[in-house]
Every structure is written in structure tokens, then in C-alpha cells.
Amino acid sequence: MNFKKPFLTLGLVALFVVLFTPGFLKIRDLRNRNQDLAQKNKRLQVENAMLKIELQRVDKDQVYQEKILREKMGVVRKNEVPVRLVPQD
Image (cartoon, rainbow, N blue to C red; front, side):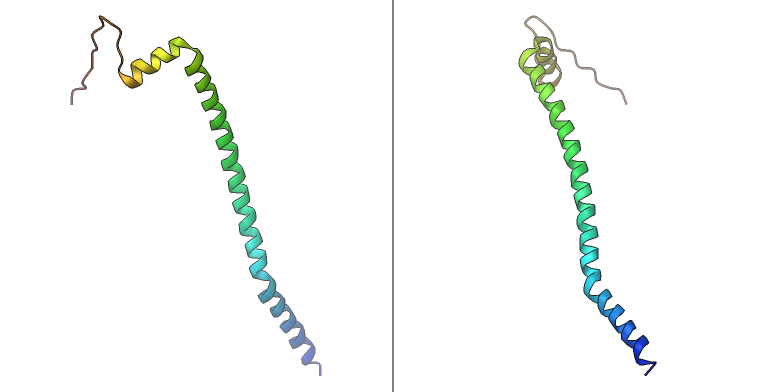
């Protein structure tokens, strides 16, 4: 009769592990995913704020507008000659 008690205890522990371990692992994975998403959300909020500032500059700052037109779109003023430097290999 003394042998039944340890086996019963071991069986209950094994049952507990089998039943609840997947749930605990799922909760841990979801917490990790939640932390990752929270960090991504913070990065995107910062990026969004920076893009809003740049958009305001594009809308209101004529010097910035000209810079963008010249650098990204290759626009030149009347009577200007565009010069492109070609690197030598």
C-alpha cells in the first residue's frame, strides 16, 4: 500500500504537466509576441512622427522643397547646366 501513494502522486504530477504545460508555453509565447509588437509599435510611432515633421517641411518650407526637387528629381533652374560626376574605377 505504501507503493501506491508515490505512484499516485507521480501520476498526478505527470497529468498536471501534460494538461497545463501547453497552456503555459502558449502564454509565454503570446507574452513574447506582445512585447515584440509593443516595441514595433513604438518604433512605428517614432517613424510616423518623423514623417509628419517632414511632411510639414515639404508643405511649408520652400528651401526644403527646392532641395528635394534638385536632389531627388534632378530639377534645375532656368539657365543652369546640370553636372554629373562619374566616379573613375
